[in-house]
Image 1 (cartoon, rainbow, N blue to C red):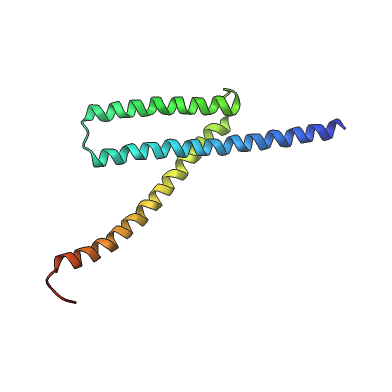
Image 2 (spheres, rainbow, N blue to C red; image 1 turned 90 degrees about the vertical axis):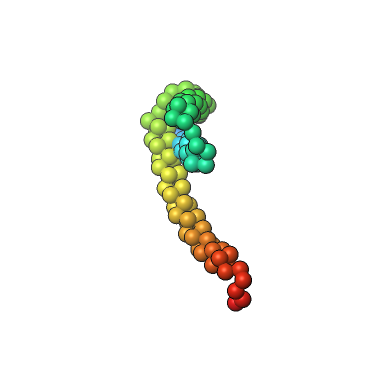
Length: 127
């Protein structure tokens, strides 16, 4: 009887660890996406060098607090190796996703920009 109870507890423990790992992947993706949003803001609005440094400092402090809270709620404050691995994998997955999405968006913009430049450059001509 005890062996069956131990096996069930082990399965539940592994399931919980898998869930924590998936949450860590999500946390890593969120952290990476947040930094991409900051870098997009920098491309749109010109920043002084000291403002960029201040933004980075605020970002890293916020990231540290966010990850601390995630670790605290998922594993009662103990840092697990798979949580750190999950955060890294989540960041990598989000980076790949953003790169692929960026390529697709650039292709769409190029196709439509050709169409608009052809139609806008020759407004007097009939087709």
